[in-house]
Length: 313
Image 1 (cartoon, rainbow, N blue to C red):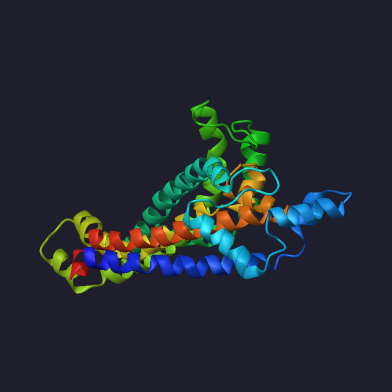
Image 2 (image 1 turned 90 degrees about the vertical axis):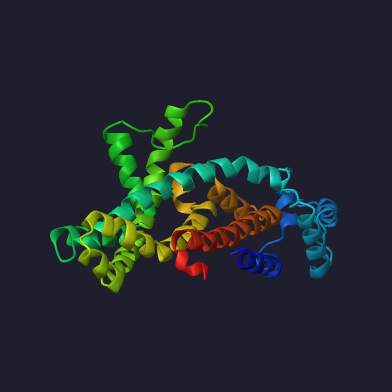
């Protein structure tokens, strides 16, 4: 397994290098001039010239990439041209919020999705199966922003149980924090749970029809042991991959959901940066999320060996 992990780690650097070129190159296609946007309404030529020199906007494309990439290697993602703060500091400010939201959403998705998928496969062609499939179809077809608005109308406006929007740090008030985060977490987790349910059901149906499961049943093992120990463990392999990718998506920022509930996470950060043509923030956040994606894929591959011993050979 160590050799496999080292081989995967050897692909991380060239992958990130290619991603950095892609991020920087596509960023330059955005319309508008950040120097003009920063200069304000008067757009004084001297101010514009100073801003272009300060942020190397008057340099060739490859020179600007070199300045940015060399800073990234040193751990410096640049400074925000809008609010004059280091991008790394901005990421560290938003990261705890996004991690909490993503973790809560993923827990909800795993509990609902895997449970519904297992029940649907074990109770195939019963009303349990039909109900789980209806839930999956509803979760896949319901837009997050629409579900979020409905939850706000029900639990915040009508019942008054939860706040409609906003964010409170868990270190200030844990109860208020959970109350503010539960609705956006459920909105995000609902869609992922539907996908996990479909994949879990499909994998479980395939495993339950395999020879070793029939042998386990023929030996007289309890059905719960057959399903949970022998079938589910092998069926989790594709679910692990999907879960890692979905968690990476959540960490990259749920733009619409964070806008609806006014959650100050990565989604709101990158939207504001795009509208303000804050190139450094966009590049830094996208590169950070790409690194998270690659890391989560590596962890998913390692988890394969822990879940299924046959892959170790």
